[in-house]
Every structure is written in C-alpha cells, then in structure tokens.
Amino acid sequence: MDRSQQYVASLLEKLPKWELSDPQHQNSFDRIKDSLLNASDLQSRLKALYKVSGFSDVALGLMWIAERVESDPSKLESTAEEENLVLGLLKNAFGESSPAGFANPVMDEQPTTSLDEPSPAGDGFSQPDTESGFSPPGTSPAASPDSTPGEAAPISSGGGGEVSEQEFSATLERLVEAVQSGSEERTALLEQLSGQAEGIVGSQASDNDYKTFCGYLIEFLKYVSMHQLFDDIRVMNLLSNIYDPFSQWAKADASSRPGMLEQAIEILRDFKALFE
Image 1: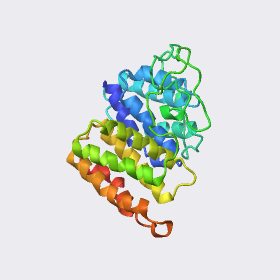
Image 2: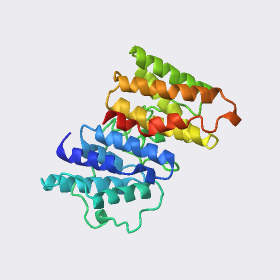
Image 3: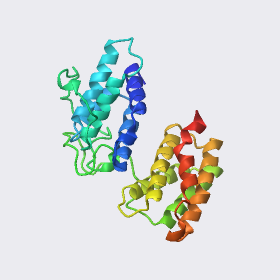
Image 4: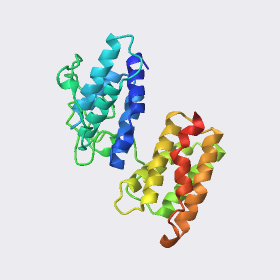
C-alpha cells in the first residue's frame, strides 16, 4: 500500500458512517471502503468507481485528494475539510442530504488523472447489483466497455434474501463451532452469515433490535475477515458471548423478546476496544 492509499485508507476509516441514515447505505460504504483499501492499484479502482452511476464525484474527490498527497510529502493525516468533502459526496451519491456548509472543491479543481481508460477486468465495480457495494438502491452502474456478461460478483452476500430467525441462529452456531475447532469451513460460514445479516438489515419487517444486532455483527465479521483474526481467542470468546443471548432470543416468543438482545448488541458495539 503506497502513501496515497494509506492516506485515503486513514481518511475513510475516520468517516462517521452513522451519518448515513440508511443501514444499507452504511453497508455499501463499508464495501466501497474495503474494496479501495484492498486494491492493488488505487487509481485503477477509483477509475472503476468513477464509471458507477452516481459515484463519479466520490471517485473524483478521492482522486483529487490522492494527487494532493502525492504532490505534497508533508501531508500525513487527512484534514477535517477533506473528510467533510468525502462524506458530503457520499451522501450525495446515496441520495441523502449533505452536511451544512458543504462545498465541493473538486468541481473547481479536477484531478489530472485520465479517466478514458476502460475499467480493469475484475475490478469489483462493474456488477449491476448491490453485492458489489457500489450500486445504491434504485441505481445501476454505468455500462463498462470491457465488462463480461455473466461475470460473477466479486463479493458474495451468501444470503439470497431474508432467512428465518432459527436459520440465522443455526448459521451463527455453526460459525461459532467452526471458529472454535479451526475448521476450514469458517470462511464460507462467515460469508454466509454476513449475507444473511445484510438481508435482515435491509428487511422492512424485522424487529429493530434484531436489525441493530445484525448491523453490528456485519461490521464485526468484516473486521475479523479483513484482519484474519479467525484464530484469535478474543474472536472465539466474543462469538460465544453473543450466541447465547441471541439463541435465547430466537427461541423466545415475541412478547418476551424486548431487551433480550441488549447484552449482545453492547458487546458488538464495542468490539474494537478488544483489539486496541
């Protein structure tokens, strides 16, 4: 990861994603962030993002910032102005209101990077669905000249719609057991559970505590996967500690459920404190 990518990575990590009001938008932002941070070539990935309908300004803003970093060795940490810029561009891309006083300097000062090159194959941005993380609800990516029909999405939700509470509990239990035993199945189960959780968060019918639990669980699972923490005892303990109250909640009737997930939600909300 070169200096400009490290700078962009730090900037994206600082953004208060909770200011995106829709949980689906928060999840899409996480996928955008992960894809950019894991890119072998940041500029190529940003060019691909530029081609996604609604996200051209986001890509331009990040290109503009990356070029400023490359031309100024003294730039080590993102500024509040840059963070507000990117947050405002993201809100615009997702159809949400921008922060008060938001200004868009990239409209006056364009990056010098050429945007005429086609997106590299497998760039992760050319898929016409929300699984790629770059297609907000109600929009579709712009056509890419080198996209391959039928090409598989690079990030699989592992879901396929909302599952029942019992099915979700069973998947969580299987993941707990796989992590504790060191089974090779744990990666596939993590992806499956993440996909199921995303379906629940996006559902109109799910219980609010259930959706909150799933939202924090998605963030935790992404962190575990990104940092390859499957063998960390803290991950094993956390999964065990959230499974028990969730299992009880899933088995309880609707009238008994209020408050039963509070402990698990609190554990997930503060999970990063365990790894600092």
